[in-house]
Image 1 (tube, rainbow, N blue to C red):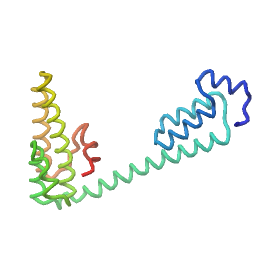
Image 2 (spheres, rainbow, N blue to C red; image 1 turned 90 degrees about the vertical axis):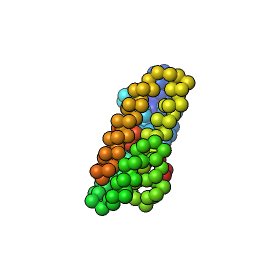
Image 3 (cartoon, rainbow, N blue to C red; image 1 turned 90 degrees about the horizontal axis):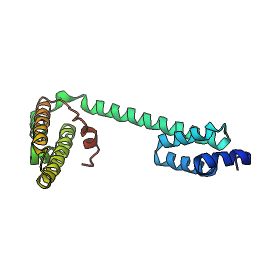
Image 4 (tube, rainbow, N blue to C red; image 1 turned 60 degrees about the vertical axis):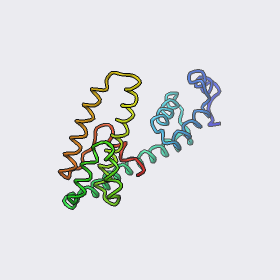
Length: 187
């Protein structure tokens, strides 16, 4: 396969613990799974041995196309977020109020339940809900393993108050670490 000398195939196998054919199969699998860094590393590893064949060139082209597609999708998602957030002057006082109070504990479900059609309420409601869930889990763990609860309580209050203020002002605030995760919640 691939018209390579037996010596080159053996050298590759000795250094990588697998045949070139197996490496190509791994690369194909990684591309399908969206694990582009591993696929790229695999292609580079094969090329390190001065190996270049039609199938490898096709995999490299496929990888570049998938990575480009991923970048395009990311740009479109950011553009969609900009479009949906560009009309902040249209956010009503009730949306601002519901989104703001959502940052306080169990009230996090209010913006999602009372204004499910509002992108502004969804944006803040998802963040507030995730914050509430995480703090509840941390609280439960701190009962079992005491210590650190005081610092987490202070952190929770600070984040909640800041989120409250941003929502009440009608601003979209991306909560550090959790904001991107919250937007992926299927709510």
